[in-house]
Amino acid sequence: MRKLILSLLMFCALQVSALQASAQASALPGSAPLASPSQASAQVWHDAAQMHVFGKAVEATYAPFVRFPEDINAQARKALKNLGQDAAGLYLQFRTDSPTVHVRWTSVKQLTMSHMASVGSRGLDLYVRTAKDWRFVGSARPDLKKAETTRVLVKELDPGMKTFRIYLSLYDGISALEIGVEEGSSFEPEGFEPTGAALESEGPAFEPKPSAEMWKTRKAPVVMYGTSILQGGCVSRPGMAATNILGRWLDREVVNLGFSGNALLDAEIAELMARVENPAVFVLDNVPNDTPEMILERMEPFVKTLREAHPDVPIVFVEQAPYAHDFVSASSAGRVRRKNEAQYTMYKRLKAAGYKKLYYVSGEKLIGTDGEATVDYVHQTDLGAMRYAEALYPILKRPCK
Image (cartoon, rainbow, N blue to C red; front, top):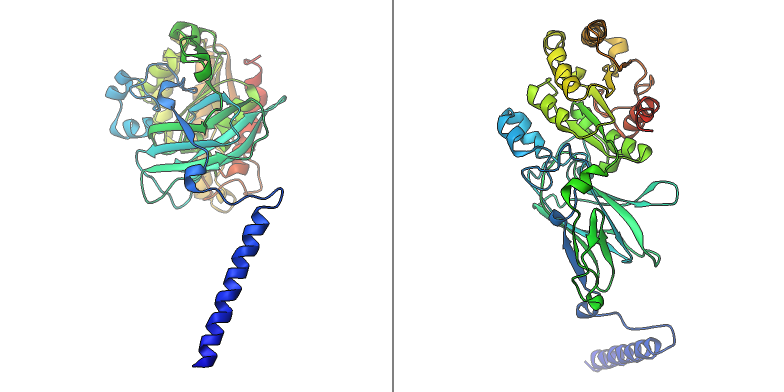
């Protein structure tokens, strides 16, 4: 018993000594006790629904982070309605000197796919503008157990104002989105200008520029129509979708009208594309979802709608890339070949009918020939998306000058 009591006394003495040593160490220069939660820096949250959303075909959509205006959404097939709420290709820009950038968002579908990273399908990622280009700095992984997620996009940033771009989810809708910066930091949404209404100590208040001015001054956008591949399947994060890569390289908005399994040359999508103000170029990459008969029947009226609205805007037809296993599957290769032949037939027919500024991209080497560019022999990995962007960039940069 005495041994037990002595042992306990020695243990207590050691604990007291350790606590005293810790207290002395915390008093040394350059050291400080850990801050309590109440001492942690606070965030100021900004509602992204009040910011300008880049990447849309038209300004007035039925909700802030969707791709369709109200009337197109009303006309569209059920599958298109569902896909139209996905935020593929949409992004926000802002300037801040905050050392940390936070984000909080609510996903509509909470979609999880077995062949695509959740950061790509329903997450976000962040880029910063440098003197030469846009550089990736962080991503926000979605909470897979609930609709709302709060994340730190990037932290420990050097002092000074920086321009950021947040790409939105590729395969999910977003019903609410907020950007958080540290208390006392500046926050300037791009597309907004100070009103001068706020007190200087509180920072400037912001309001949207007049709509006509905002859309009048935007660089002529690239408008791309296509399938799940164009929508972004199955890259690792939103910024790696081919349309977003091309947007950074071309330094202009690229409107992503990719609809998974549903690039069926619908008349209302042609109408939406025709409404885009001052487009630089149209890209039609619909072949993977279509049959040869569908292409032969629907392509001409689709192109006619675009050409009547924009007589001088180039239109680029893109073939389907071979599937990864086509070199050992004659039947699969044959199906791809017949669809591409139908696309080429329509291209030649339209040129013969007097349509000008039509261009054609072969699918043979579109994403390389080594079979390493897809996740499932169809949908592109980051490598495939990069190769696709590299193939189209020389064609698209000419009308974007």
